[in-house]
Image (cartoon, rainbow, N blue to C red):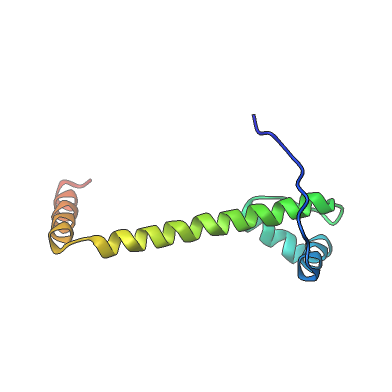
Length: 97
């Protein structure tokens, strides 16, 4: 079970403006849903909107970590690793897998 807590965080003018955009404009609310899976309405509380922004940021960070990790993994592959991968792919195609 998730434990919900409240934290005091500094909010800049830009942050406050983004909160207001998320409340006022459907385009921003749709983007929050697409990025973070969070549904907001023009009646959402400031806390709900801030949570959506945190969730969207967390999703973006996780995505970037995966991209960076996959890039590092690909860069670390040797010629032998790539040759093995090609062979496995070739055999899978022949076997119809």
